[in-house]
Image (cartoon, rainbow, N blue to C red):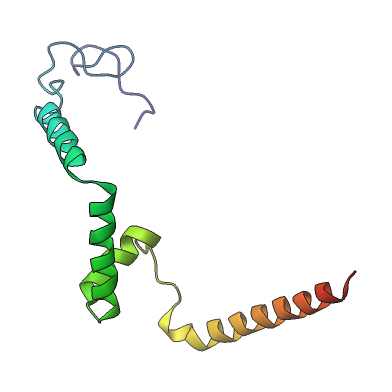
Length: 116
């Protein structure tokens, strides 16, 4: 597979690899303008306070045990997890490693407190 699309005739692309005029696939998204208009209407309709109110409801529901609300809240604030935080079979190893890191940090904090 070549790095650039072929610029020879027959594939419907121009010299820069873009769809050439007359290519049936070069029409783009026929709904793009409409979606842009609808988004702008939605953005004008929702104030910062509205958004804050919605988030506070999510927080309250998540604190009350609503797993779906917690997932939405965490996904939107921390980002979606792409891989497991740790392997289930190695939880103990990860716990011990974390304890060592915390102990080392505490030792460094104590040492820094003694410095003038």
